Length: 532
Image (tube, rainbow, N blue to C red; front, side):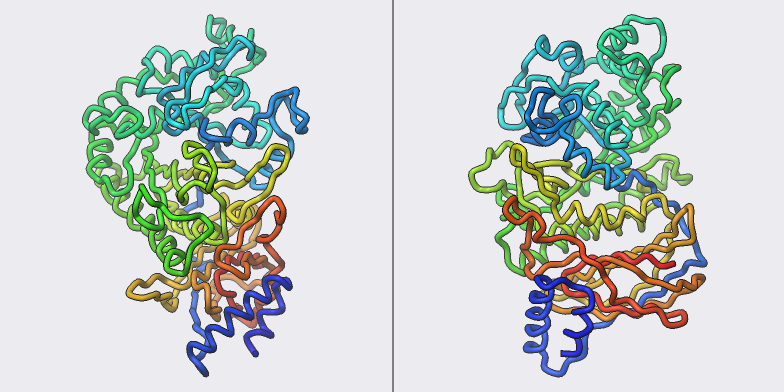
C-alpha cells in the first residue's frame, strides 16, 4: 500500500489501476519483499560527446500508406492540406523537432528513377512498385513534393540514390538538379518546374542494401561501385549545405565483414557508413509475431533483441576504429525498428502494424544506446514515419492518431544536440525464465543553450516498480519536473476509437535533497526529468 500511495502522485486514473494490479502481482509473488532498487551517479562534471540531433531522424519510403495518404493526399483532397501535404501530419511532426528525413527508400530507392517524379503530375509515368505489394505508383510525390514536405516539418532531406538499377549519369544529374544554381539545362529544368533556388541537400546515400534488394552485391564489388558513383556526386555552387555528406551502404545486422571491406577499400571517400537492424521478437523473419497479441515472454524477448543494438554498434565501431581512429566517418543506423506480422486483413506488402507500449520501450532503449555511442553514431532513422512498421503516426483516411513511439520521441527530444553526461548505473535484473536483461536504462544530457540537465529512465519490468536513488555530481538543481509514459497493460495501444489510451502524463514523484535525486519508476515505463 505504501508503494501504491507513492505512485498515485504521478499517474492518471487508468494508469493507476494498472499500476495497482502490477504491484499486487509483485506482492503476491514475494510477500514482504523489498521493492527492487537501482543507484545512479550522474556526472555533470564530466561532459562527453555532443548527441547529434540526427540520432532522432526518420525514414519515409514509397511503401504501403506511408507516402500516399500518410503524407500526400493531393491538392484536391477534402483532407486539409498545403500543396497536397496533409496539415495534421505536418503539425504533429513539427512538434517532434525532426532533424532529418530519409527518402525514397529503402528497397524502392534502387528502382526509383527521379525524372519520373518531376514536371506536371498528370504527365508523370506510372510504374509498378515491385517490392511493396505490386501496386501502381503514380509518381505524384517526387523530388519537389518531398523537399516541400521537409521544409514544412523543418527536417533536412536525406536522399537515397539509385545504384541498383540506375546509372552514374542519372545520379549525377539528380544531384545537379537539386543543388546547382548554374545557368545549365538541369538547373533550368528545376526552375521550369517551379523551384528557382537550389534546395539545401547535405545528406546523400549511394544506394541502399546493396547486399540484398539493392543489387545482391559482394562488399568488394559494392566498394568499387561506391567509389565510382560517389565520384560523380558533385558539390555544386548554390547548395546551401556547401558540401554533401556522402553515405555508403553498410552492413545488415552482424555482417562485420561488409564493414571491414567497405571502410578499408572506400573509407576515404565516404562521410558515413550505414547499418540496418530490425527488432524481431521471434528471431524468425517468416513468423515475426503479432504487434498486439503477446505475452510477457514475447515482451521480454523483444526488449532483449533490441538491446543487441548495443553490441552491434560496438563491434562495427571497433572495426571502423582500425581504419578511422579519428572517427571522421559516422555510423548511421538508417533503418531500424520493430517488425511484426502485418495486421490481419492488411495487404502483406504494406507492412502495416499496430504500435504498443512495448514499441515505446524499444524506442527509448534504442535512443539511450545511440546516445551512449554518440562519439561514432552520427544519425539513425526509425522505420518508418507513418503507417509502416514502427510508425510515429497511423492514419485512416481523414483520421490520424499518435502512437506510443511518437510520444517517446516527443518526450526525449530535449536530448537532441545536448552534451552527453556519463551515468554510472547499478540496476537490478529483469529475469524471465533463463533470460535476463537490465531492469533500468538511463541517459543524461546537458542542454547546449542552458544549464538544464535532462535525465531519461526506462523500467523494462512490466510487473515491478523500481526505486531510484541518483547521486548528482557537478550540478545542484532545485527542481525536477517530468513526465511519464506507461499503461495498465503491456499491449496497450492507441486506436481511432481511443486515440489517447497511451499518452504521457505529468510526473511529480521525483524529490531532490542535497545531492540526491530520489524517485520510483512505475512498471513498464519511460520517464523524462528536467533538472534545473
